[in-house]
Image 1: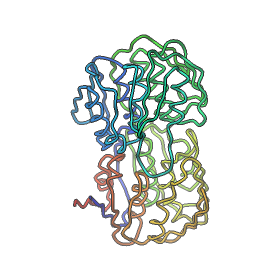
Image 2: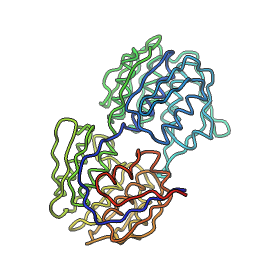
Image 3: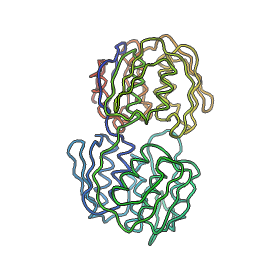
Length: 417
């Protein structure tokens, strides 16, 4: 199992290109199941989760072609309706085949999902919405089995604004009979990206990016050519890294408007941010000021940036309070940061962080994708060499992160085992 070794103390300087967004690419790739013909996708990140998605498409009968960051998918040969446990356990986003398979093949059998160990993420909201649209839902031996001769439009209220739930129902409703309204829908940029893709395919979707999404079902969809939006979480991770190291980094191929909540908090913490079209420059020339954060659904502060921002607060002047409102187990990284000298106390869903003058290198263990990134960030400013173990999580969501950091001047290397 690979490790990453980081020796701290170097300022990050230079320019880095942000890759396509994993969380946008996954549902967009799976939307290819809704139609015959060749769908073409560009700016697709080269990640483990993408590999898993393409393998799943292949097993379902689609033809997949990959050339670097360009992917073609033809689901004309779609002939299977089951997403097996061996694939779904590796990536919970595999559950996004439910809507497309049900709409296209009238049935689906999907293993209950796995993924990062950051808390319960049940799919009951997906199933409730599909049932309202006329699907018969059963659970057998760890699998969801669902059937519908033809889905019908419905008025669906989501108990929480789940991203994958909104995406699954939006794809299913695109081929349903009649009109569907999703209320309390997720508003993330990735939702908008999927809606834009479906509309290119001939769907009729309005309101994506707001709490109410309206879908008028059509009889069929056509292939599309789509470029995946930039990854706002990768961009945010590099923004925090620049601030941590007192560096100056320009991030190219990003969407600054997707980063509003993080940008506001970094500015409050004393970080300089300049926006120039589709790029932004982050610089920290003075001390970092403690700033409180509460994670919220978009457009609030993203839970996927909580661990990284906590590292910044661990060396800030003063005390900050970080409240995690999305996932109940998303403070697993705290114990590892404390091994590196961070002063953090956790009570329930709240962490109190008292800034220290410096962190110290230590061997640490990554527990999930974003925790892995936070430990690398901590290593960038710790005295000595930090070794981050179990970095396979990183490869699920960051494309060659160690090479990108090295290009900015970091002392970082991957140790293959």
